[in-house]
Image (cartoon, rainbow, N blue to C red):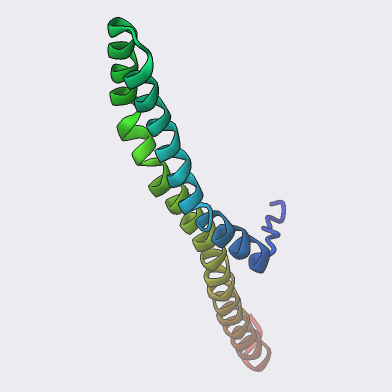
Length: 117
């Protein structure tokens, strides 16, 4: 079986996740700015049909853009959390490996000290 490893720079991944979380306010401001521009355009376009179309455009994008900041925050939290998960898994694997080594050493000791088969 081929050796399988994961090489992750945990501190950098965690820092990048927190940096993405830091973009949450910027994403929220961008969404508000876009929606505000659409409302302004709808109010000032001077054409009822175009104003109505811009209003529908605003309504279409209101929910997705409102969720943008939440999604950016969730992405950053997930990335930062993955670094913690890898660290936890690494520690668990080391403990498991140590138990296997201890059991193997114990078995070898018993086999070496026991009667020949």
